Image (tube, rainbow, N blue to C red):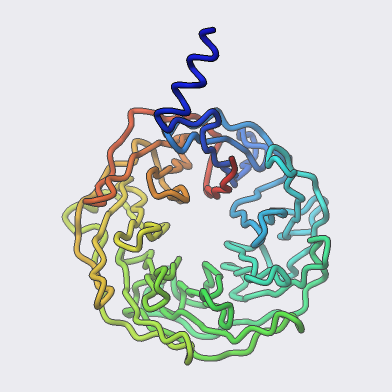
Length: 375
């Protein structure tokens, strides 16, 4: 009888028997003697913000950044291949219930390890950015999601004014525009976002142009606004965000603003920018400051795309190399690499402020958080 009453109450008052959940895939570093063994998996209740304890999903060396294909059926990661083969990329099949990963194959990059990777929106190409090698690589994907041998490698050229960090090119992120016509590669070493035209069928990229960030700023990661009119680039070296107006037809970027994520007076210890995210509503931008161990929040002007500072919130962890917003925009997970933690924040949908929930889970050296929605 009690079970029947509970069921009726849920139906009458709009409750759900099955709370909406998201699978959280976590890329890690795997330092010698460290606790991490590969890619980890957790689940998040999107109603309450509760995050389960991460568990090992795939044993692999230094998976770092991970990326899902457009259908969510495969997961790709950067990695360090065994037996001295160097940097590589790995493919996994995601189970239908998103509870497990099945290894498909790996491929060597051939130009050092990748700092970042992305899949194009057709699911036919995998792109990687090699920070140390100064290059961008392209890998075709077959119908089963396996990674085929590298089809293209393009080396960047140039340098920047920061003698310690910009003697040569350092591509740090790779991703397509929403229309999947162009590939964008922020290069920390040359203060440019290099733009390529994509040919997914041939597995090729052709140099198209670039967007320029301030000299010595060190562009690291970028994201496109949902309206496709604006792009936001996080600059690692001077801890700033450069706002670009984007022309999707021409594939061009025009800088309209650069705003600090951390003023000089707060940089008492060495600090650097790490990650940038745009709220699903398109109203807010968030950027992480390593060293200061905080996330800066900004409000987006809908007409110009320019940013206004809202607040800086401590991540309750150490060295936030990565963070992410869940698909609903209600929650933010901040990964503390050096503290082996993931901290949970609620996002105020009206103000953009971050509210720490008081909850933190342990995860060994997390540096990438990827959400996958499921019921």
